[in-house]
Structures are given as structure tokens and as C-alpha cells.
Length: 89
Image 1 (cartoon, rainbow, N blue to C red):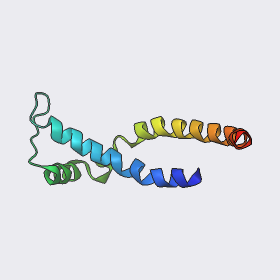
Image 2: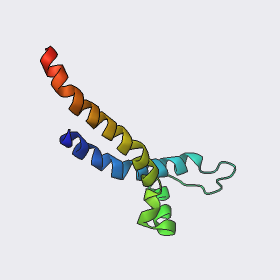
Image 3: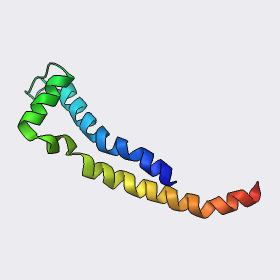
């Protein structure tokens, strides 16, 4: 189980930044989002210029708030049902 938690960690740190950039790129030019980007590099460079590296990780806390309880519940369930599953085989 510890291996799966370690394997998930890189995704937890990079996906919020990528999702933020993707969302900004999709919304660019729409009403309420007058900022227009020409591509992924443009949205990345403008975000870094305006907000710095921390601006890329605005969504990290909500993501962790969602993922940590789910992983914890899965871990507890696997730990408690593991011996039971081994006995039934």
C-alpha cells in the first residue's frame, strides 16, 4: 500500500498545475475571462509572470482534501480485509 501512495504523489503535485493551466486556456476569451492565450506555453508563461510558481498550485489544497481521506479509507479497508481475503482463498 505504501508503494501506491508514493506512486500517486507525483500526480498530486503536477496535476493541479496542469489542470489550472488547461482550465485557463479553455476559458480564455470567453465572457468573464477576457485574457486570451495563444497556447499552453503562453498560459504557462503569463501565469508564472503574474502569479509566480505558487500561482500554479492554487488547487493543491482542495485536491489533497479530496484525495487524502479516500486513500486513507482504502488503506484501512485493505488492511482490515486483507487477512480475511487470504483465509477464504
